[in-house]
Image (tube, rainbow, N blue to C red; front, side):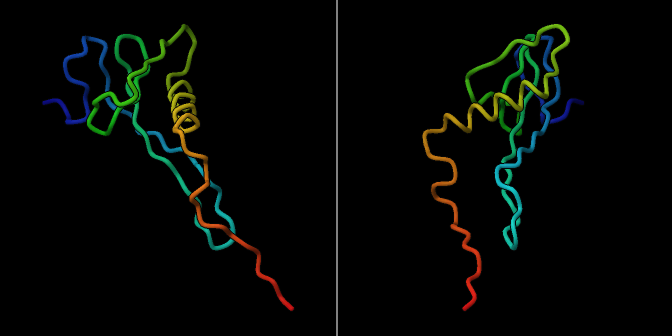
Length: 102
């Protein structure tokens, strides 16, 4: 029986959905940091960003060349998607000020 994290109906090249965790902000002081979680899979010899159930979300795919690492391609796609999200990175984040002592 196949697991629930599989792309359905995309052909014989479908594989399991892989989880990807990107560090968005480093931990600093009492701030624990921030991460972004994404999922990717391989379909038709291309890397595709998808949700945790294997449904494509980005509408784009990148081909895997000989000697390419699919995980690195997925990381690049996630970073590009984050940069192109339309909002400024960190604009709505909490401001962290150093403690001032008098």
